[in-house]
Amino acid sequence: MGNEANTRLSDLFGLTGWSKGELARLVNRQAAAMGHPQLATDTSRVRRWIDTGESPREPVPKVLAALFTERLGRVVTIEDLGFDRRRLTGRGQAGDGLPWPPGRTAAVLTEFTGMDLMLNRRGLVGASAALATGSVLSSAMHDWLHTDPALAADAPVLDDPLNADPAAYDRYEAVPVGSQEIESLEHSVEVFRAWDSSRGGGLQRKAVVGQLNEVGGMLSYPHPAHLQRRLWGVAANLAVLAGWMSHDVGLEPTAQKYFLIAAHAAREGGDRPRAGEALSRAARQMVHLGRPDDAMDLMKLAASGSGDATLPRTRAMLHTIEAWAQASMGHGQAMRRTLGEAEQLFVSDQGDTPSPSWMQHFDEADLHGMEALAYRTLADHEPSAAAQAQVHAKQAIQLRVATGRERSMIFDYLSLASACFIADDPEQADRYARMALLTIGQTSSHRTWDRLREMYRLTARYAGQSDIQDLRREIETTMPARTRTRARGGKGKGAPPGRYRQV
Image (cartoon, rainbow, N blue to C red; front, side, top):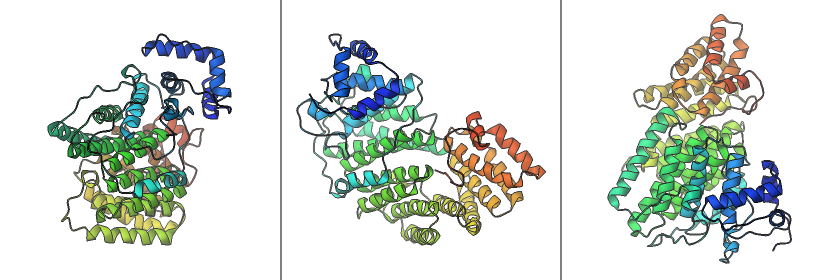
């Protein structure tokens, strides 16, 4: 028994509105549903968990995680509740810090995806939760990411309580797979990636999470080393997609967790550049949320931890994200220097080494799109930067024609329209804004609504002009009700005034 209160459990318990007696009854009922009818918890035992830090034996931590996940509407893991899995079973300290111990990534992703699927199945909406800061993540993961990964010949043996019960977490009962099955999984990643680029993450997120859950089960079986590496690659790619789709629909803590799972999976498979790219996604998320300092911390880790094998095009992509963070802070000179380096890296890539599948969507159009974004963001601090934003946005749009990447095209049009408003050219801004409105309703991306809302605020200066009045009415009609309220200055969670949010 411990002698200190479990503050994590106490804080989450306070959010539920339960009494201690009610929680005890729920634990017994849920445990029976999960195949443990013999469990008998009472109020005094719940009090000891919270007030004295007593750690319950398995399966109680898993039962509690399931209960809190359903009640709070977001994934709550055993570590979130303040319980140390390895100490519970006498296997030594593991804690809830980063990085996870070797061989536990498959178990972590299996549990997390299982809980996420439970939320999807029951129609719950992810609640807000604190994101880890960039400095905390960088400090915890620096040494781990910089060491040379060594893939074991066999898959990790998951003989601990993290190996969740199927009744609780929908864990896929996988079997060892061969090269043909892995090839099919790799193809499914490309299908999901293309859908996400075209229509946004909302409609396919559950399918991606389910596929990742299945892959986690596959990783619990021994495979030859070369197949195991490919499976880890599939897991990393799916986790990035799950994170990106979660970010796309506003599930920010969930998205960050998937990005970290992706980084772990990539490193387990020996792919440090992929791990760095996964961390760069977390950095982009931070800029979108108005936390560029955290983004810079993550980008330093992503760039340094990617290793010497990182191709010039990948390094160019990393530079564009760093430039966006610098622009968000108003550091124009640094942003321009970083974008110049990105351009040089991009053109230096001769294509003699094929780009990995996860980098093939970063082409010249994306380079210009990110440059347009950076200059547009800087224009909040330096209005003269809007002219350069227009140049890059137009180039991106021209290059994206007939690519099937509608969401990216919408972002480009919104960048272009916003830059025109800042440059005092409402006639052109109106034109490009209406181009974005043509297809924006066909995506399931919340981030497009964030972008549209920011552009809508720029129209206020020209609200007296009849054409802009018509545009404002059309935007108000197009936006979902909650987004429309925020755009008009009502209550709701959005970016602070002047903060430009993007991909």
